[in-house]
Length: 75
Image (cartoon, rainbow, N blue to C red; front, side, top):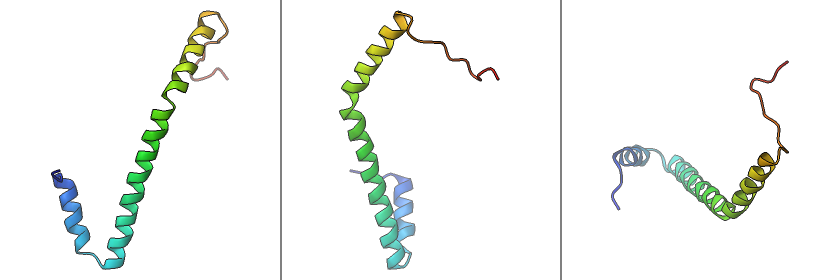
């Protein structure tokens, strides 16, 4: 896989830092990647649940069980 120019530039800048700062930045990057994957997994695994909630909401709206929201709310 080819690294894009922005990442290439960032990596080059990081290599000029002291080792402890490189370590800290590497940890931040890896934590961010793990967090992003975590969100993707949670959204993927909740897809069925969200579809069911949307189906129920449509039924409630169709049967008049919902009320219109007004923004900004009247004071």
